[in-house]
Image 1 (cartoon, protein in one colour):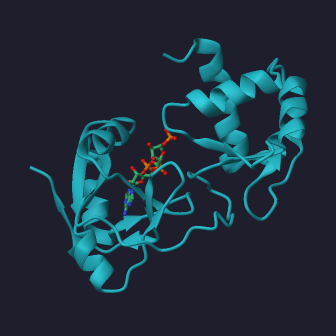
Image 2 (cartoon, rainbow, N blue to C red; image 1 turned 90 degrees about the vertical axis):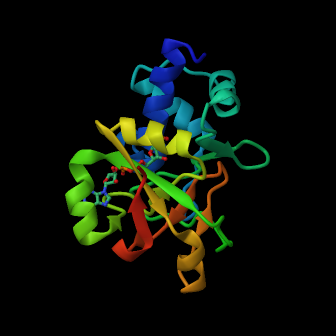
Length: 182
Ligand code: HQG
């Protein structure tokens, strides 16, 4: 189990590494990396007392493997979830026959009407298993799971990407490719 303090640190890291590097006066390089020492200094200025050892521990122990270093650990990035355009160097890969999107029942009507849209993020996030999709859905309220016919989408030329931490990413899912899970 992650400690309360590590959770607090990790949440701030998510904010900086996915959405707002400017929060600590930084910018992403084009691949979404920032300098590890700049992250540590910036976090300390914001009152998060972190050392390289804390960051290394969080990167290794994070339950969803949200972050990764470059090989010499001088740079760090988030593996997915960005709202800022970054190049994650992902190549399109063949998806499993079905994927899952967990969301809240309050979005169902709009999803049936418009399809699954990426909203503020760089991609729509899909899960490979039902359990994970359920957890994602519960973050938003009463959960509902949409089953995606990824096999047909792939045949029809849609591109699927797999992030380093195994989240499936896609630009958009039109309504004809999903059904609600009973
Ligand atoms: C919904 C977490 C209305 C969509 C998770 C979702 C994930 C629509 C919400 C990652 C819609 C966006 C991403 C439409 C989609 N009308 N609502 N047409 N199309 N939506 O948080 O997938 O713990 O940006 O269903 O585990 O929930 O942060 O996306 O409910 O992997 O690492 O709009 O974030 O990871 O919400 O979650 P989000 P998400 P972390």
